[in-house]
Length: 329
Image 1: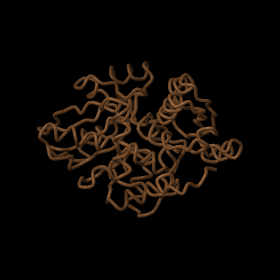
Image 2: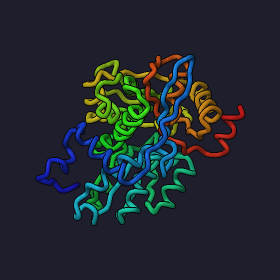
Image 3: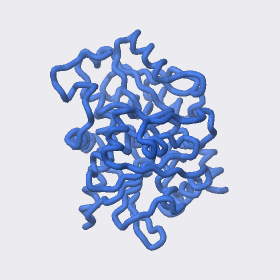
């Protein structure tokens, strides 16, 4: 589907590395201002919340998308890219593609939030819809790639994407150091397919890493416990965390997670809503359900925190009426 380059940095089958995360961090730093690292007192401890919901596309996904698309060869640029996404990665790829003048096609579920579909189209990407329960988005993407010869920009199963998402950890560590903190010594990450979690595991090699998922979509947590990749049991399981509805992680992500001894935690719908309300009341931030699961795990006591714990608030793309319902519940 893509050209094989003699440059190992441009080999799509390569493994992601800490050096790659640092290279991605330098790219992102040259493009975007740092997102805030906000202190939040929880039960006598101060945790540090990385407000990725304030990115230009409302989520951290812009990091991996920019790292991936800026490493395309001229021939790959000419053929365009195909992405797969529940919504936030779609906007990240569309934003980067528009800035770089690259044609982008995004495979998105037909039941994705309307605002995410609209935002992706507004950024100039073509959206191809699929049925999340009955169809495989990877199969749909493969068919599109066969027709166009384009490059797959997967939402998490890609070395550039993993490295790009990890740039948030490089940034947060520098912000902590500027505040006189030696950390992070623990990272609690919102997890769908594992791109952000794996990137943070590479970025913060001394930290304990915890991947947090919503109930019913806890395939990474179960996979880590079992020592093998397991799929979601019920693809129709209802959740408000649309950003984290991934069928299963990929070997490239799982290898990083296992090598770093990452553990998982699972939160409920009510716990996620509690975290969204607290983020709004105490941090004055709009955080979407999928972007609030890491904070939810801390608030619910499912993951303990240290004084140098990093918590990702990974996205803020939530329907206004849904958000109003939740914070006034």
